[in-house]
Length: 466
Image 1 (cartoon, rainbow, N blue to C red):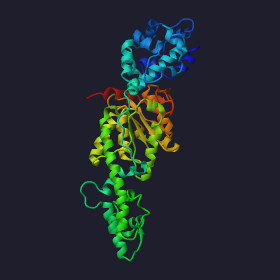
Image 2: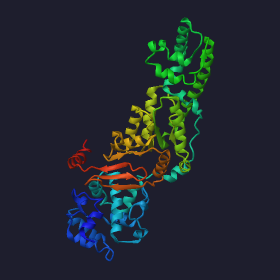
Image 3: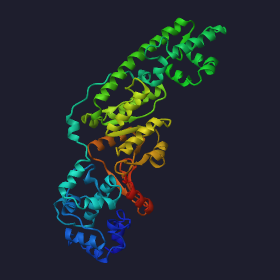
């Protein structure tokens, strides 16, 4: 195989920025290409592997590094047997047998480099010194303990709240129906005022919808109207002829509110009791009763997967939890995002600072984040345009990206792969030096190495400065 063919085959891994990144480029010594062309009959040993690294101005690697990447099939955060070029025969070898064999090991190394180091040069400098045991220990610390998840058993059962009543646990409903020692709730007071004005003007019969859409509410409660409409969803078509009608209809919903809120507060205590083992935080924003229904259905759909059930996955369902106040709610949700192992972001119809902040928090901690959209157009936007879909792990500086899909079943599959350490990735280099790691299922960029030399050198030389 001629020099150009070898350079082309391995161009995916190298951008010629120096050191290891220049090993198999057109500027490499001709002797290297002559040697690689003979691999089928004369496998490449560690000694010669290191010689060629030194000839391209890069330090050699340990026997452990060589064996780990080319002769082992270790448990990892992804399935190494799904890496292109895999052949079970490689695990019985002691030297690199072919170009496909070399390709497989380099693919694995570059995948690890982007996952945990942010660039191949830094990764090689750190990993080349490690023994096999040290490499196994390093990556074992990155894996989820699947056996522990399976064996820990289920958590305490959450209180069940009818899906049609879950909207009543929202902060808007709490303000409308009142909590604490308020003598009359805001919603009831506004409806009574509006009905009395309506009656004083000669009106005989009105629905709650007509009262809330009337001039009195528009003039006096314009800022609260969205909250009042939200909380009155079940009352909208109720006809009011006397105050007693309003009392009766309102009381029916108020009882539901009290029961739902009591259960939601109890559930929050249960969520806090399992926070050290929380697996998935579901981030969303719900502005209507139907949003609550849809979100409840979506959680059921995602987490009904039998593989997730076998793992006893603990996930935070936002339609089942309430707090004593909005400040406590913020603390609770920040704690859960911090403690959860992964986050599912449900895009919904509108942007929301809360869920965007939660997704950004999770990405900035290096956690797996799944963006679930309700349509293909939004999927493309979140995958290719949205600024929060790619950030950096604040601790390591490694660029991280969300996995974006419009299919709930993909979200289930991704969670299974994450917790079973069976992720599958594709490496791409669309332009020279821009190395991207994509989740194979959704084609989302989850890691990348920039090809901007000034940015790269500035970033990695100064990011970790105190």
